[in-house]
Image 1 (cartoon, one colour):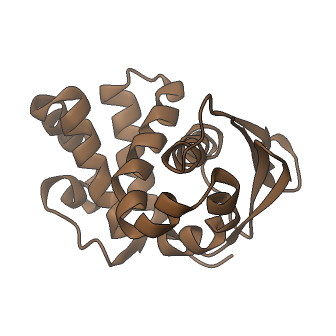
Image 2: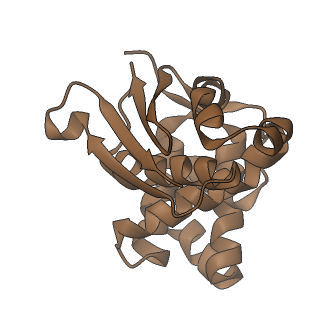
Length: 187
């Protein structure tokens, strides 16, 4: 498999989230605990249009989970949702203003390629208020699979007008499934 890469905007979102959620002191403690190769993304603003190795983002996330979240992986779902809310509305403003959750989710493949490489994302809309997102040709760490991406899908639905949103991680490569899938429901 090719080296997995993430967009700089995902790297820049991490210190912003920590600062806004827990404050400057917690950000400093997360940075101190982070390996130097990844610490630079916490101390200096990353180039948002550049691509970075996934491992650097994972290193930062692990320190955030350890230091700021006290090891509670479930906090990665609101983390993922908030990070999506930073970027998605500015990049896809017209799409969110005019589109329904089903319409926006059908466009998730375009958004995926803006943030993560390699791989693809596809959406099947099953009925009004229910869709499944599948990611292929890439495997992400379990915490990101189960919680972070679920939060990202949740935010995409909410930002496009969905209410009473629920997202479940229904299939996972880490659990022996053939792919990773998330089911979103909304009204």
